[in-house]
Image (cartoon, rainbow, N blue to C red; front, side):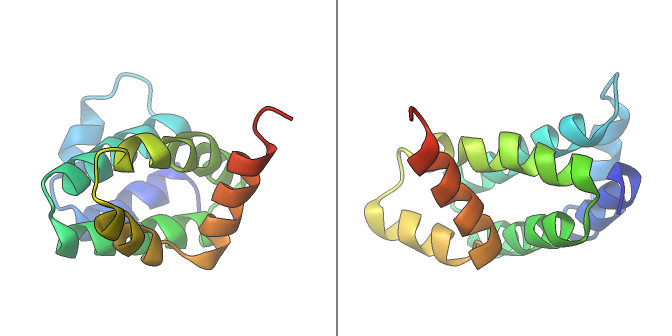
Length: 118
């Protein structure tokens, strides 16, 4: 899957996503994942759990089926932003969010967190 296919996938979950993408001047895997990550952050803040959980599943699908550039974009943008996105959540809500992140992405998160600063 390339970034154009990823936009279609995201649009299945977030119907107005494609119109938001059209406003991005330089469209590539990183800008698409950055935009989707921002939407997910807003879902977390607004406690929109239904859409949030479907979006997290979609992020996993994009990671699993995506090309190398999409995988790298997810690792460096979405995974990197998880701590910041959940910093002001209750411990319980944070656990619920992480329980909806695939084990694949949780491994990437753990690797990133525990290798940081070594």
